[in-house]
Amino acid sequence: MTVLLIVVGAAVGAPLRYLADRAVQARHDTVFPWGTLTVNVIGSALLAFLAALSAGSGVMALAGTGFCGALTTYSTLGYETVRLMEEGARFHAVANAVASVVAGLGAAYFGVALAEALL
Image (cartoon, rainbow, N blue to C red):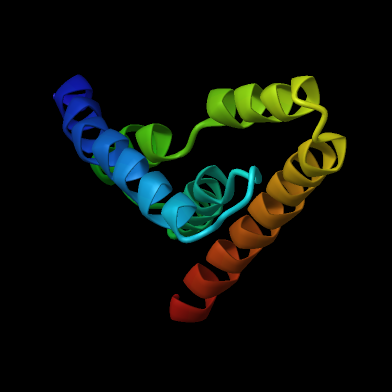
């Protein structure tokens, strides 16, 4: 049952990641990967929120592992950062790495704070 919940969550998260990434990136005329940053920050906030709520194992399988796991993408962050370096956009590469870590941790902190405020 747990595996099925993960699959269902991922089946929603993966296409949403792609669509959100394309929608955000289409609004920015820059090489900076705003779409990936956006989905990773949102996913960090949501996962931290769920963890802080001590959501049940079914909810964590569906929303945490499945949905957030498919929505967020560390591999794309790594790939885009390397690609920016290879293209000579060193500032954007460093900014992407730093912003992703700082914003992701900030979003996680916000998710925990929001959950604690609701408890």
